[in-house]
Image (cartoon, rainbow, N blue to C red; front, side, top):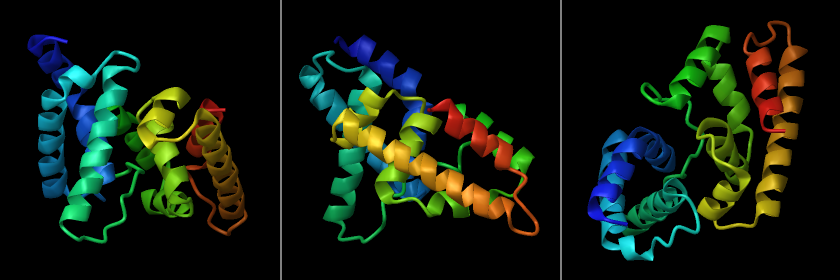
Amino acid sequence: MKREEFEKQLADNHIQSFQWTLAQTNYQREIAEEVLQDAYIKAFNNLNSFKGNSSFKTWLYAIIKNTAIDYFRKNNRRAELNVVALEDAKSSKTATQEKRLRAKGDQAAAEHILQSLSKREKEVVELIMYQDLSVTEAAEIMGVSRGSVNTYLKRAKEALKNKIQSERNSPSGPSFEKTYTYNIKKVA
């Protein structure tokens, strides 16, 4: 890949890359900016390692994830690398989904439901439902098999359905129920 093509790919994927970086840095904006800059430098310096076996976006997301992990290791920080993007999604595809959630109801309740998922389940939800990546791309980024991604996705969907059902049975009931049900069915 030539430098011009690389720069175009970065520009085309920048907004989503920043959203992914925010998710990887527990929505700490300053850290996300630093991690993304470092990831771009690493990507440029290792451009010859991109063989085209996966999409550029998948390759870049893996670099971003590893750069975030390295950042927290290097700085001896014990921050959980959260992968569910429900905040700070103002100018990407997730913005539309977030607006839909906000329009449908209580975002705090939605976050509460997503927080009930395991780290891997949240990561799968972020990659597949909010970043619109395939199971294969998510597997590459997470460093696991497609079967593992499918298992995490199945568990996440089941956990979300159960949580929504219990919320539905509560006196107030969630107003975002239809949106979550739609998103769960979307990835089925």
